[in-house]
Amino acid sequence: MSGVAVNDGCVDLYNQIKMKKDLRYVIFKIENHKEIVTECQGPVGETYKDFVSKLPEGEPRYALVDYEYTSEDGRPQSKLCFVFWSPDDKTTVKDRMVYASSKDALKKKFPGIMKEVQANDMGDLDAKEAWASSQVDDLMKKK
Image (cartoon, rainbow, N blue to C red; front, side, top):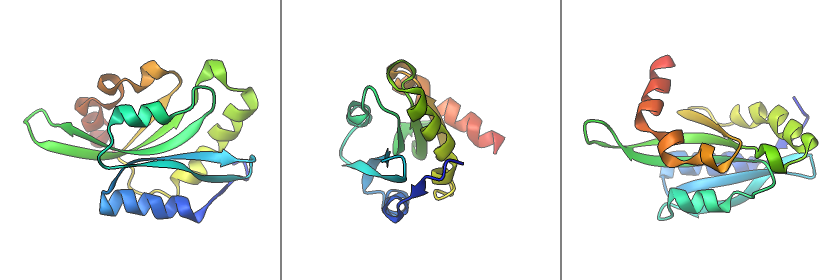
């Protein structure tokens, strides 16, 4: 545990994306190594590519993504996913350590997350790799 606090606004946006389903994603950052706050959010009309484009190239972030996909039997599905973005090559060791040690404090505020993805480069965020419905289904079977 890093001692980094979670701003109440983060929980409000988690409830909004989960219950109202009017957001595609919410991105969070650690401000001044003291508090996790909201950096930006995307309305439901934005795409997964829009979300990926908002992640900074050289800084870690957390995100919630309401990911829509089609199941193997053709049904539309969506899963609320937690993303830990930590680009290995472009961040400082201190930033990576603070984000890694603060992740659980944030996740505890978000009950019911269906999937977690840790991405260390843009390739890890490829939609087919990170979000394939079979991977989401495999995770669900383990819970």
